[in-house]
Amino acid sequence: MVLALTLAAGIGVIDYSTGRDAVISAFYLVPICWITWIVGRSAGVAVSLVSVLFWLLGDLSLEYSYTHPVLPYWNAAMLLVLFLPTVYLLSAFQRAHLHLEETVRLRTAALHREIEERQRAEKARIQAERLAVVGGMAAQVAHEVRNPLGAIVLTLDLVKGELEKNEDRAPGEGTELIGDIREEVQRIDRVIMDYLALAHPRKARLESLDLSALLCHKLTLMRGVFAQADVFLKDEISRRPAPVNGDPDQLWQAILNIIRNGLEAMPGGGTLTVSLEVEKDAAIVRVRDTGGGMTGEQQEKLFVPFVTSKAHGTGLGLVLVQQVVAEHAGRIECLSTVGEGTQFTLHFPLRNGPDGLTLLEVPGSENS
Image 1 (cartoon, rainbow, N blue to C red):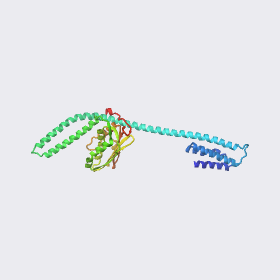
Image 2: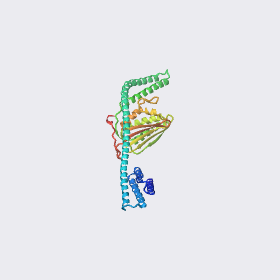
Image 3: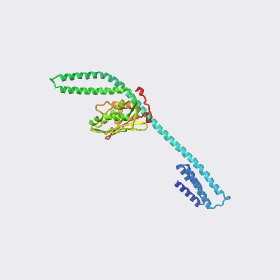
Image 4: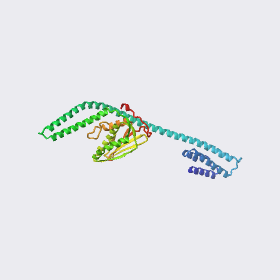
C-alpha cells in the first residue's frame, strides 16, 4: 500500500513539474491496478482517490486559467470515473481468477483422491481374488492332510509307550526322537489350522467392548512371555474408554499375532511398545518393536499369502490379521526402518456409547 501511494505521488510530482506537457495522467492506473490486484478492491479505490487528489492539487497549484472555475474539479471527477470502473472490473476479474484457481485445486484434489481410491479398490480386488484361490486350495489340502496327521500322532503315542516299556534299549533317546517327530507334526497341524482359518474364517460375534480394558487385561497375562523373551513391555495404553463394536477373541488374536511378530523380530531382547489412543471417531492401536526392521520390498509383500522371511512361517499370519481388521471396518498400516524397528498401526471405528461417540456399522458382519 505504501509503495503504491509513493508511486502515485511520484507520478503526481512528474505531472506537476512538466507543467502537464507530458500528459501522464493515465499512468496513475499503474499503482491503482497493481494495488487492486495484490490487495483488493478497497485498496484500489483508496489509491484512486489519492491519485485524483494529487492530480487536482497539482492542477490547482499550476494556476491554469479555465473558462469556468468548476472545470478542474470536473476534470478530476472524470479521472475518477476512469479509475473506479477499472478498479471494479479488475477486482472482479481477480475474484474470478481466484475462484477458478480454487475450483481447479479442489477438482485436482478430488481427482487424486478418486485415483487413490481406485488404486486401493483394485489392490483389494486382487487381494480378494488371491485369497479366494488360496482359500479354496487350502481348505481342500487341509481336509485331506489332517486326518492322516491324527493317525500319525496316535501311532507315535503308541510307539512312545512301547519304547518306555522296553528295558533293553535306552528309552531316553527313543522318547526324544518321538518328541521331535511329534513337535514337527504339531507344526504341520498349526499350518493347516492357519489354512482353514483363511479358507473358512469363524463368524465374528460382534459385541460392544472396551478395547482399552481388553488390551490391559491381555497384556497383564503376557508379562511372563515378555520376561522370558527378555523384552521390556512399554505400556502406553490410554485408560480412557475405547468402545468398539467387535469380536474380542478375533481382535485380540489379530493384535497378539502382531505382538508375536515383534517378539520374534527381537531374538536378543529389546523394547515392545503397545499404545492405544482414542480420537474423535477411532481407536488407534500401535505396536512398535526395536528389531531389525524391514526393507521397502519386504513391506510391499507383507500381506501377500505364503510370503515370509521366517524359517518356519506360513506367510498367512498378517493376511489373517488384515482379514480380521477389515471385518471390523478398520485398516492396518505398517512403518518400518531397517535397523530401527517396525510399527504396526490398527485403526478401529468407535461405536456409540454413553459418552456420545459416533456409531459406525461394521460392514459384512452378517456374512463374515
